[in-house]
Image 1 (tube, rainbow, N blue to C red):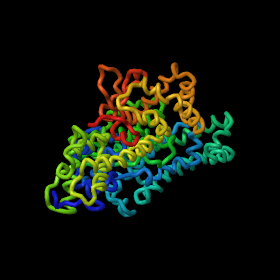
Image 2: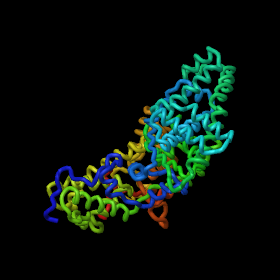
Image 3: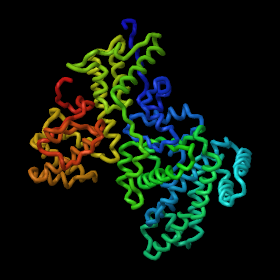
Image 4: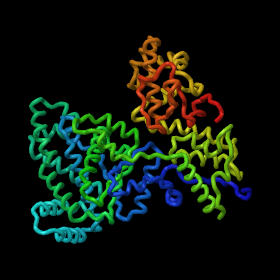
Length: 544
């Protein structure tokens, strides 16, 4: 490949799917997830994976290939209007259960967008045509007549912006509540959380009574069920003509966490209720850390996280999948940019790095088996090798410096919501020999770390300040307790792997999906740092 020269700006695509449309469609790797996600007879519909695992790529592919696809973005739906509503915040603080209201929101949105898509409603005359068509689909039926009345009641929802569609529902709650309480209570309600905290016990009882009746609008709930029944039996039943509602970006900060998690919980429950529409599938994406936060934040008796795991599609990639991904993208790069030759990755990268691995294997071994990381590392190699025709082992090692440091930054950002102190915990394994025993970690500078972290966590109101202080004061008694906690978190986020006993194998959560009880971590257990972080954390390990 002597005639090939790596030019400035050469890359095998962008790590983020939304910026990678050209390569995404030309070099798409189907590892079975796309088929599973788009099968309307398959209940699995929640794409679960860590950042960069390809969730958004699947959504992009569905939107581009499936004609009857509706894409919803929480930000564009203006769901933050709910968390900004003083009345809704007042209800939340007063202890009114809003689950029914949140489910009503999703059902209403889905019904509107499905009808709008099916009948191509863009303006008022289109709505009249759609209504006439719907009415002709059944013989006289009181339930379905009520459904038509509900659709007609919200007629302008079909051509107004998404933002106003949701605002209508919020305004309805506020208007209905305002009509049922006295002026004094209403003034407190308009103060939101602050007003709820100033309620007397008598006022609180009154608020709960009136607020619950407004939120649980039994008439609206019944009407929505009627509409779902009408659409399921008469409109959305042809499995050969599927409709998809895709929701991405639930991970973004589109609403305050407390309300956002309740809205996502309501979304999960709404997905189940739409299964009666046999050719409609709602597909959503969720990051692993958001799932963890969601399940840990919801403690309502009626919500069982286990029953929703049957809806999960775990984004898993093998080494073979990732090798194919690199080869396809490299070939596309040179076919599109440079030549008509069939160029594979192995043609332009070192056959060996260290003692055992090829250049491609070396790169993949320093990822969590996620496309984003593979693309980012390979692009870094192309950048370092600019002006050359071959990526040497030295080029790979140079590219690894930036890649490894970027991985640490990305990891801390990814888990910042759950573990804002993750950067601090990384110091516990910084500079260690790979495969060190836990006892060695305790005998080093761990006591000094405990003192520093105890002070730091108190100042920042972070978790585990007491555990750190106890460990500092009595390392022999409490040191193992605290380091178990730290290693458990580092294992969960993927920084370390563990070999608990001499007769067990080394495991990393990202590849084995094996949860470890931190109480099983012993002084003789061995700690291995993932190779993605070796350079950034100064890990001493043997050649691979």
